[in-house]
Image 1 (tube, rainbow, N blue to C red):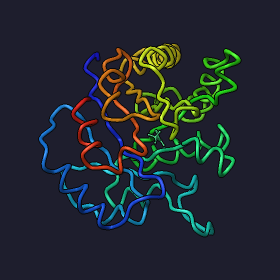
Image 2: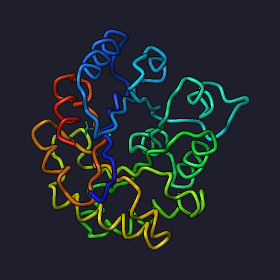
Image 3: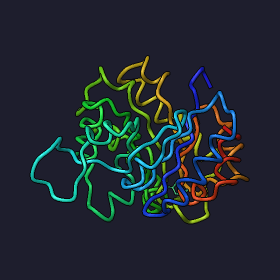
Image 4: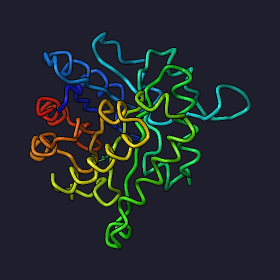
Length: 245
Ligand code: PEP
C-alpha cells in the first residue's frame, strides 16, 4: 500500500469498563506487531487508565473550543495532555445524535491539529444516497468542508475513515470492491488539492469489520486499515483484525 503504515483503530463508543481496559491492554501488549498502528478509542473517562507505552489512544470526539464555559465538553488540549495521539471527528453517530454539520466537523479537525492530535475524520453516505448514486458527491462535500477549513498545507496530517452509514453496526459490511471504489475516489479527490497528501494520507474503512472480512478489505490498494466498532470490544477478534492489517 505505497508505504502507508496501516492503522487499526477501535472505537468503543459508549461501551466498556475498567476491566475491559485491563484485559485489552494486556492482550494488545502481548502481541508483537511492527507493521500496524493500533489505536484504542475508549470513552474519555477511561483513557487515563491505559498505561501501555506502545499503545496509542484516541478520543471519540472533542470540543471545537480550547477552554471556557462549555459544560460537559472536553478539549483537544486536555486529551493531548493525557497522552492521546488521535481523535475521531465527525463519526456518523455524532452527526446524527448531535446534529454535527460538515462545518462543525471541520472546525473540530482544526482544533485537533492545533493541539497536535491527529484527527480521524469520518465520512460516508447513508443508504438513500448510495441508492441514488450520489456517493462521490456526498463524500466530496464532507471532505471539502475539512480541506477548506484546515487549509491544504495541513491536509497530509489527517487520517480519513470511510464509513458508509448503512454498514455501521449492521453486520452488513461494504464489499472490498465497494470500499476500494470510494477509497480510490477519496484519495484522488485529496490529491487534487495536494498530490503529496493524496499519496500519504491513510484512509481507513469502517462498517461491520470483523475477523472474517478484515483481510479482504485491508488487501485493497487504497484501504490502509480500519475503524472498528463492535468487534473492538472483543479482545480475540480485535487482535485478529490487527493481525490482518
Ligand atoms: C464505527 O462505529 O466506527 C463502526 C465501524 O462500527 P461497527 O464496526 O460496529 O460497524
